[in-house]
Length: 343
Ligand SMILES: Nc1nc2c(ncn2[C@@H]2O[C@H](COP(=O)(O)OP(=O)(O)OP(=O)(O)O)[C@@H](O)[C@H]2O)c(=O)[nH]1
Ligand SMILES: [Mg+2]
Picture 1: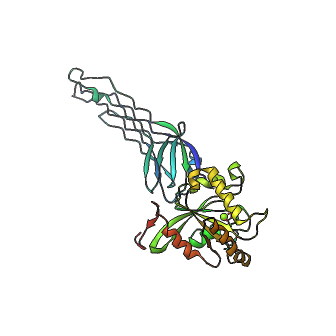
Picture 2: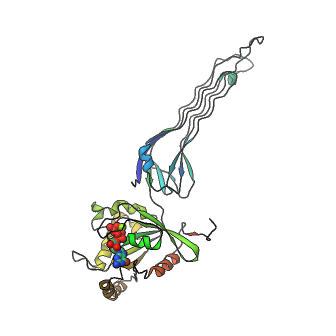
Picture 3: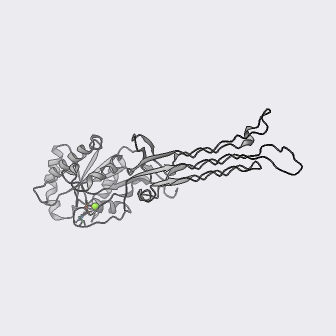
């Protein structure tokens, strides 16, 4: 199950109490105070992990408490500090305060750590309070409570390129043709129910991460279909690949009206998303009908300033051109240039 939002409570461990104790030993009269300090409580720490892709674990662990510190003891024995509790989250996770919605942390790379709830300080034992005028203090302090708060954890997948199109346009087929991703593909709308990520190798050993999301339908912003709630996952991409199916569609749809409809949905979701550059591709060009229509449609789009790239995930036509187009686009922070074998 793909989960991209969770409300969680985190609490740092309580600090251990300081100890009140006096040294009692044969032949050592008035041995003096020897109460040790309590250990500090552990903290709850969020850590990004590139092998995770969902917040599902958080649904099952909605309340995380770190280990408490151990109380101090006599003979100047200090209590052990509580261990930190690590909560692993996928890269692309945003942590917000549940009340104010203030953004506290944005996990951009693998292995980042964020202390979500600090553990309480350990208390001080009475040995700490001895002075020249009070050599037998009965004073000690208790451990402090750990920080306790509610957080809103949100996942926005980090991808460089987003695939966009009506249901059945061939998005999942395309990602499976250009990357190692193996999403479900079928001849009916809404095959894809949750986003898929795929790593595409470009020329010069560069790679980019492509996201396939469920198809969009008109009025998606009013709650129709599935696509709208997943648009946030392509919000942080640098480039969108807009897929058009040239084969005859129902309801007097044409590739141009499809194109406008999807862009309208983008603008309704968020103006920034609508301003991300798009590569327009015509899919399923191996189907004779589509190939026949292509020149007219290409002209229609060209007249409005859009270049259409013909493509077929089945025969592999146009995939190389698409790869080169992806590599020429302004390299985002996450376009990685890896020498093969250097990892
Ligand atoms: N002939 C041909 N069929 C294709 C091509 N690409 C996709 N298809 C077919 O089109 C249908 C839909 O493909 P999907 O990849 O599942 O489409 P999608 O855009 O992911 O659809 P949703 O997940 O429902 O939004 C499947 O039956 C595919 O086999 C292509 O290049 N050529
Ligand atoms: Mg799909």
